[in-house]
Image (cartoon, rainbow, N blue to C red; front, top):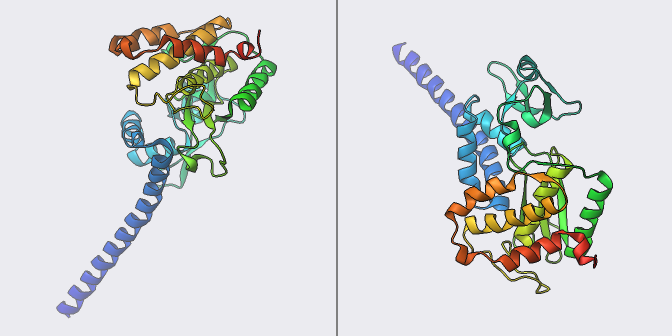
Length: 291
């Protein structure tokens, strides 16, 4: 009888262990699959970004922080609608919730700060990527059409968190980004939650990376491959392009403050003023149209 009880106990332990291992394998397959997809799109930097994101979202479990990162890259702060209301901020109509797991329950819905409006948060106006001024949908649409047709720039407006303004990629170098690619094109992704002036400043920055050669050479020979430049040099050149294009357009931008921090780390012997000016000319559609 004693041996029978022990046998049953071992069987139960073994069964529980198998269930845990199966659960681990299923979760690992799901999470690691998402991570591998991010690696294919973003490169090795995705690892450090995932780890840093989980550290910053310390009010969530590590697993839920990962779920937020997958659904809303660049999220700065997330909370339930009830918690946002408690600090006099309200979720905007049509905002898409972020789904996370709830302890002892199915799921919970969170909203990123960009999904809300109302009482200002500390430091909300200090974002160096934010731009202010007048720019309407008609002008914005003309700008997108110009760069799509003249420079083979694919521009996508995505539902990013408030800390992610945009990015630029060479689609030919990463064909997994756009499976139907047939020739060299460039991909720029922008945060659709930002205002048009801010999206313009971001677009100018990302086009600066492309036109300065940071994403590779132009197949038509308009700019060389300068992708081996240090990160600080690339950011300095791209932000200088953004500052020139946005401020000359009459927008109020905080780029100079961002630049002042960058240039402390830059070897200016590697910076090309010509590349900056040439890129700014390309961003300004009037230049290419002979105005």
